[in-house]
Image (cartoon, rainbow, N blue to C red; front, top):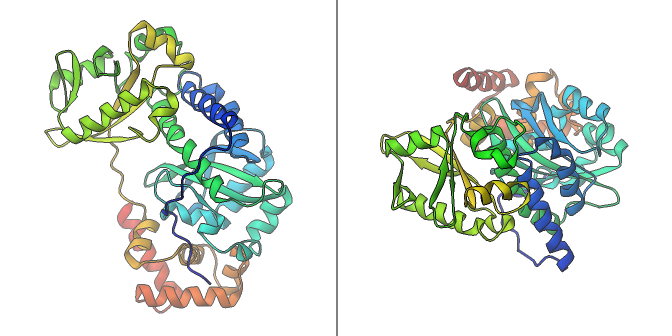
Length: 395
């Protein structure tokens, strides 16, 4: 088996094929940010994302550690309810891409062939029983954020009529990913409550996270109670000559680059300020997100307060890495080797592992030999004990 292609490779940027596509992207990005105020719009936005790629269906979902369990936050209508449920009930741990969440970088698109060669994928039980019956041929996915318990993802399925994921598919996904990540992160801070744009600032005064509205130069137009308290502490943020200042010069520069870009429209902000890491003088860690207020349903709030952006700052949740990721990094496991290691927990014999993963018995034996060599173990029970030790230490 050939080693899996690296998921963090860079892909060449190419111009969008037409002005129409450029206009569609600009409109779509505006719709993505509007879900912060209108979370019920996610289904329609995901459909637009799928059409832009193009794809068959799109979803925001969470997947548990070891590929087990999870749920869909929002989806369009491309995958029916029965298949969505059966995926998490029966097939999530058989999906080769489940292992990729421990290898892929946040915000970086990965597809099936980043985990294993496509001819091997079509031999898996997952493909034969869940993928092929729906006419699906491929899936491209971006990890939005992760914790010890699960990881949140944005993914789009490709149908037979679309073909396999291409370089252009990956590039288009890269155009969407930072905006989806930013919208999801901010939406979580406002707890997905329905907000009226005209009263955005007043409503957000009750948030536990700090929210500060500024113009393109950083001039403070409004701050909620948490934001005012954070500025008053002068531990990480301050106001000088009416303008917001971050104590870290590097973060301050990155923040103001994002604020300046936001004045030029939703699509201009791009990857700037998706998740700015900030550390206070006292050593506490925070994350900041910038939401443009220059278009869509957000424009009324921005105009009311003469602001072009809303900055959201929250305490960083420093989660330890999951046990599978720790094991994979420590012993240099490939995605396919990690799949076999995780399958050892669920099945007994080599034949059972082969049947569950949809690969041949010789392939399982090859992966097991490599696992034994890399981990210094000799038996499957030793692998179980080793992995169980990391899981217990991480509990």
